[in-house]
Image 1: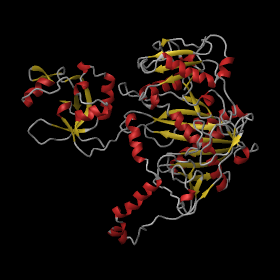
Image 2 (image 1 turned 120 degrees about the vertical axis):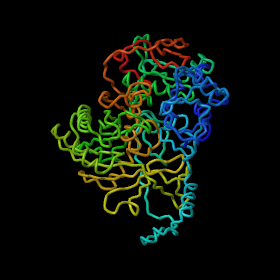
Image 3 (image 1 turned 180 degrees about the vertical axis):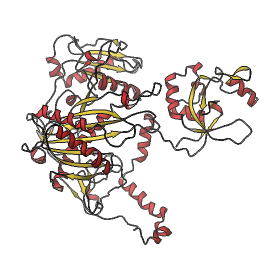
Image 4 (image 1 turned 60 degrees about the horizontal axis):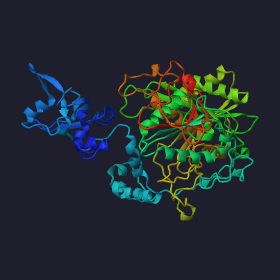
Length: 625
């Protein structure tokens, strides 16, 4: 909820300004960028005003003014007056902060910030500001035993036994939790390079480490760049050189092989961001994802390497060469609450190897708030063609994971489009279709203390529940595939809608769990199969494609199609080269390392642009982390 009280105090709190309301005055240096950020937060809030004789009536904020009350002029009868002078006459006293910006109401009226009050109990229906996200998440991080106590206490608060409605229907709610049977399936074996001291590892409690292991397929970094978005007094040249020195030690063999000056844009760019630099992070992601054709994830996989692969005998149902299988994951990302005229973005991810570690993806925009994927046919056709290009043949089986959709929309809208794409390619693969959801309130708690995760108290990674609390007719199960280091783990709920491949329940559960271990971004198992997490990675590229709040609205028809290449979960978004774009040059400095090893860049100002004046065509193949 919005904090009740004076609006000017809320505005100062949002911008992290302490005790100086004049900081909200353009004449005192209030930047337009901060004004827009504050405007996004407070637009739509109902306020009451502290002037007038009548009882205050809540009115809605539309926007913030660009000028302060002393500079805003409007017509009053046959005369021109400022907002500050007008309220001086109304209040019989001057405004305390006449230079501070005003709020514009939905009626067009301008009210000084100091005269506005925020009524209590207003629910925030917008996307949570990035700097507040951690605070909100921290509240929800309740350890299992504490959450169990809250649930049990809820029985006393709700008083189901006293409800006349429950008695009228002849129902009763037990005061004890339901005891059910569960089992823990074995984790898959992960294979690293044969020259490793430990070429294979079996995760324990959903985690493993890289000690004594080498990447299954390492990549090479011939040239690279460091970009620092921090003031030099906090991160000077000495600190930059020290950071590079430590990094060089880790890649000494690769750097030694590099030769020649940095004549072309480097393969790798390292960006150091200041604390709280969320807007800079988004800008750098836009540069990497949209301009250069690569995304900003882990180094080895992003450059085309492979960290580890699943042991084939652990996922024999997927690695059967006689029945090649493609694994797909799809999702629709809706615009955040409060967004207007923003399209929805859809992504389809598909594997292109028998090990299920290399993926491709395609991203498109469609009508806002639409549940099913309209262009599913063309997207599936693209992914299948990429699979054939990588393996030399089309798959005979499709394993399709989907989340964020109803059963009817998937079966009636999307499944026919998948089949149509296959028919146009002249193939008839068998399809297994599953919906994976975490949007529920089901939690599981182990009765035995000895069997709980020692770090968090959660159920162990690999816990499967497929009886008692599942549908008596449909095929569904709950899978806790991650260790859950913070709070109480939420299981993923799998609903198998179609299974033309006749997989057994053990097969579906085991390879779904195995696919939670091939995420290249961490050495822990994740809560959903990798294709579904990787579509999240791809859709994180969507933010730069949405229309800016200060620009003109963009609809789905004006957004271009994007195809993405993912190497072990590191997407590179290939943007159509329509026109050249220029960037402000950066301040360069040389370090103790020669240019053939490293070209170091430093930037002291928070200026958005990157990398001199280069066209997008010149930037293809550049990688950022």
